[in-house]
Amino acid sequence: MSVENWAAFAAASAILLMIPGPTVLLVVSYALGQGWRTALPMALGVALGDFTAMTLSMLGVGALLAASAAVFTTLKIVGAAYLVYLGIKLFRAGGTLRAEPRADSVPSLKMIAHAWLVTALNPKSITFFVAFLPQFLDRHSPFMTQMVVFEATFLALAFLNALGYAVAASRARAVVRNERAIRIFNRTGGTLLVGAGIATVAMRGS
Image (tube, rainbow, N blue to C red):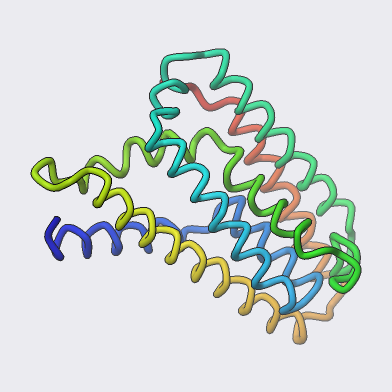
């Protein structure tokens, strides 16, 4: 595997990760509601979720999802239901910063689990990796070596991306105190999460 090939993969991954999606929205909502203490747990949860999706893809689950309508539909429903649940909870937070309990009363493991579920329980993530990774593989280089390098690179970028969003949002939390602005954020974020859940169910497997 050439350095150029790795650099192209890293650049493409960084761009894709920076595009806000359900995972980033969850990270931002936690950080706005509970401050900088959520940054590390959420970033770890995101990295673990991506690790799960990438590993399952490497083991061939991506091909199984593409071939089995039942498995694909089951994962879509589970992932979509969780996104809708989080969206409704955020929407109902109203004009308060806390869509969840105070940070010091929420175990870090619970925050990690939330981020992991949103990131990993999305069949689109697995099928995405199946379609994305092969573009950068060199058939003349050892497969497992390339997979380890690519996975480590992507997970490091995913961790840093989530951490950056969380830190930025936690700093904005000290500035944004307007109840109306928070209500708009919560309702917009909640609506987007519910929409993401519905879109997951509506997505066709191929």
